[in-house]
Length: 228
Image (cartoon, rainbow, N blue to C red; front, side, top):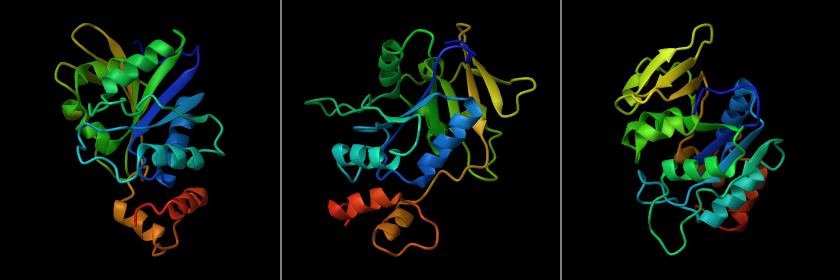
């Protein structure tokens, strides 16, 4: 895929466990939409993540329902079932396969992005067929406040070079040995990671002043007796 173009629809794929979806996920999506002028962001709860073999706490159906509630009032945010569990299979959901299928389902003129947290990006080189992923979708990485991202290249699969884009801070051009190009955009100073302990505390009424979960999501959790 070539670098993002000015024409066509701009769509970001935002995968993850969403177990449960929280305010940090929504904040990251808002920042990405504003920075990259995105038309749509696809929130895709994953069936089974390859690097998390123990799996999520809540079922896929519950995580889809909670994510739908978390983004219900957000224009341009949509649920995607592209990473749904494979029927009758325990095979993990590989991002390279999901993006390939999504790319084929979208109009040719669509510019596709992959939205990641910094921690996920740091594991990119461990992913299945990792060297293909950056050239199926331009990458957007949400960083935490004061995080040192000088080691970006170390997170990339071997054979991919990284060069700053002149005049565009926080944007880098990725090139592989075949000459394919893509873009990596950093969203700086975002507090994306909210710990499981913080979320469980809010579920059980022990949270501080900061609201971490949408009230509709919290109500769903209580109604369905999740995370008890």
